Length: 522
Image (cartoon, rainbow, N blue to C red):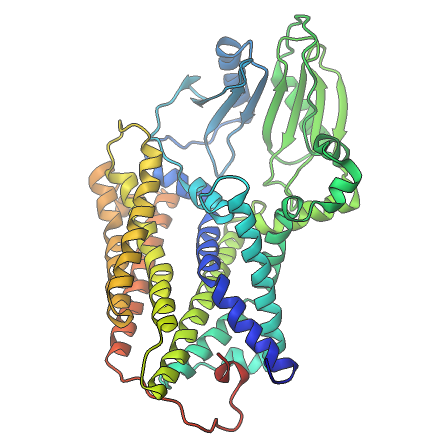
């Protein structure tokens, strides 16, 4: 590799972005959707009744149910409803090691029948697990995150004129110039966000990818590490002596008095009905910037306060704040939308970089008089990854509305709709020329998103105008966003269709004066 330092950084920027680009695009898009994970889940469960519920009342309902149905369980987990997620979810571990789950209506104290769906949880998990078994998906996501850091830093080194790049966009120029301007503008527009979200994403998986320090200090005893850093409910083996469990609501009220304002997120009861029972009350992660809130631990037999975990050590606090910045669970509505828009900008930055690579290669191939196999492969992967992913997301939402409610493994069938549509998009991209495949897949995705509110209305009886009139803002916001996505995909399909009719012009032998590095490198 010849050239100076900046030329080498340009080469690294191009190839690191290409190798990890398709995976990064999927991670950015699904991570952006995960910002509204509870709202997506709420739309995908239209039969669920969402109403403000007092947390104390919800805790009473959960305790009554668990005492009656899981009195001999090893552990209870009670996830209380919040302003964004109205579900009262109960989980308990049986003595046989199997886990059980129930969702209650806090008002009737009875289990509620909701359609089987992963909802927004699918996008959240896919964002860092890629629908792969542990730990392989997380390893791959970590590799992609580290590659993204390399791409960002090398891009900063290569581009010296940030402000000029931000204000320069010439869509009517030649294809390479227009795509390069778009890529630069999108990169500069939200550069602090791109750096923060990428670095914090790598940090969230550091215990998996960089365990040397933990292994040197704690060996295989990971429980000792979490006990020392705080933030994890203590686990005691049952004593084998039966003792009645104290009511949970007074303990939750006492915990709330210790940390002041803020909702309760989770109540964990270890060994209920045993002399070693422990009740841990955790603050909701929506109450502060750090991902792990305060926690109060009580003796479950007499209600004594045993420990309050509210001031973690500096290193743990730094980690939790960085983690919290990544997940944005602390954010209010306006800040969540800002996260969402910056995530869209990051996704488009990656997509434009991938397309720019093929545009430059096409011009070089035109000069050589032939199209290389590598160019064709990258073009097909671009179509499948960039145009195929929105199509697959739309198919996931359509599956939620059209699959029979009584179908076994219905949630997994929705996931199969997602991957089935994505696989068909990949096959289509491989069989058709890229210039013909782009507009077809973009327009198909636009049609699916545009018709989604109609399909939802026909299957649930919930119409978008009614949602707007009656203040069902989650439902209305979701479907208006779907219409906006349809408009954006339709416009993109139109632009690709116009570009398909233009001949590929080979570049001049002598670069223009002032041509930027990324325009002249592979």
